[in-house]
Image 1 (cartoon, rainbow, N blue to C red):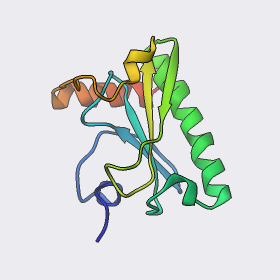
Image 2: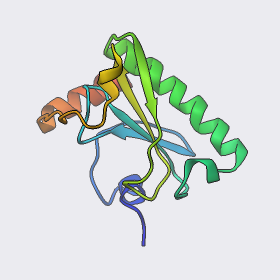
Image 3: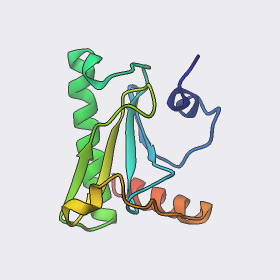
Image 4: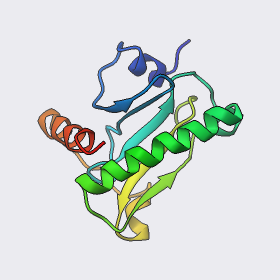
Length: 130
């Protein structure tokens, strides 16, 4: 059975897409810690990030770097936090979170709520900076 991320990539489940190329897909986390919180996933369904082939692991990091730069332009912050947790969905993924302090990437923090219009605006703000 396909993971929820594979279903998002295939267009079966809607998302707020930020970017994609032939191998990777970036979309907004629907339970974000901060505006701009983005997920990066390989299009190939692999459960664990470190099970990716070396060239795909390199590629996802380069793709993430480009998306992180766009997030930082759209949502100025001290850094873009990078988190790899991977237990909630069996599909390798990287969280990119704008951060000004360490607490900004605490996954125990309350998640933000945005309207569909706000999510679309956030995604567009990041995309236009790619």
